[in-house]
Image 1 (cartoon, rainbow, N blue to C red):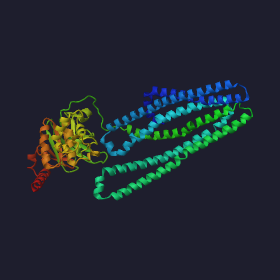
Image 2 (image 1 turned 180 degrees about the vertical axis):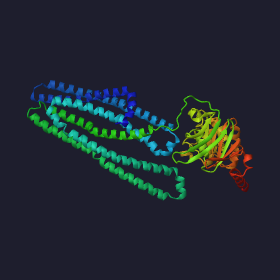
Image 3 (image 1 turned 120 degrees about the vertical axis):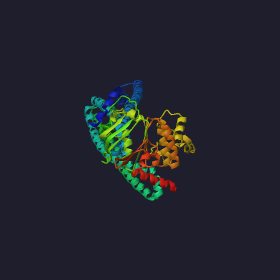
Image 4 (image 1 turned 180 degrees about the horizontal axis):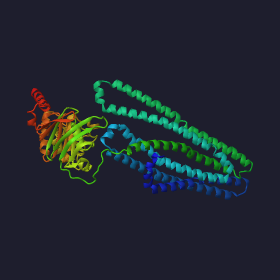
Length: 585
């Protein structure tokens, strides 16, 4: 139960609703337990009527009054049972809501290193499946536990007062039932865990298949993929059947032990009645009702125990993530006004997950309103520079300042709010094109969206779709081509109107003519903004105020376009190579 202590703060938050639920549960059980005693009174009245102890009229009056009481008690018990569920189960839904929000907020705080080390499917399971199991503990488990304890205590008191010896015989099968259900529940839990694992594998496989359907078709491996799916589905089916075989024992076992308890009541109670130890045969009827009332609550002891075990395991998985401290912390809670001066001084950076040193003693400065272009081979550290500016990682060696302040002393949210970032791998959401562009500025008007799309040279493509800007994109923007996705991402950054613009090789899938138009538009838009362009193309870098060339994490060349093409080196060689390629076309 140690892991579940994390939920105590939520129980305290909703303590009044839980207390009301407990009181309502007790009242509901008290009224429910009126029925057996009233039935006993009816049987007693029948006995007296048969032996002439009371008149026919008195018997009718007694019978009518008892039936009315039974109906009223049943209605009140039903009403309070409804209220019981409305309070305790509702509280569990509130806790589920709060816990999911807590986990989601934690996910947003964690750095990119965390996401590189953990699979998306596992993250999803913890916020959905694991939270769902914890909710079962916070709601049904608590409700049934209170229900069982209340019903058991009150019923045993009534039973003991009516017939002490018969009570002892009656409850003999109940512990056996509880232990049997407990062991059965544990086995069900084990097999259901295996079933969930197979379902996760099946879901992951189908998700990847649907996402990569174009690759599957292009390679013609549909038969092989189908065979893999059949094997997974068959395994899932076998595990499901294994679970069903064990689950099928649950209710037959309950019915068997209920029957045994009833036989004990009838046999022992009958002997006691014959021997005069029980005054009325109504006591036997009363006990049979009690047995049937108690059997299910006692059976839930095993079920509740299984729920608590599952919740404990799930909460442990959740706590593992909640206890992780983000490597990137906001050390300044005061909003900052970002101007856009960026200064790298002898920065060396190594990725923790791969232990690759991406930058080695990099130093450069970009003043507010200037444009810097970064050229280099794949893996030379270009994207790393942009990630460090957005403080997606913290540096350990060297200094990175924004407007003269160490970057970790600048308000994190102000910093990121002042940046418009277009990543190398354009990510679009499964939403309309309009909303994807408005992601950069939620309050943007339709005219602003259209203007941003025009600047990014994607407006004509968008209006060519049947629904235009209201076209809903597939997963990760699969509806669009690579170049269209990049241009929509550019429009998303432009509409934000940030102080700093970071373009990470975002024109690689665009033809040279369209690239030229976009760069001309960006030249107008970036006036007064700090802009950093990462590219493999000289055409995207040549108009920058300053250009740096990276190789193996080091700056090997720097200067403007005119100065760099005069010097033998990587930049000049790349320029001549791309110039000859363009002339040949």
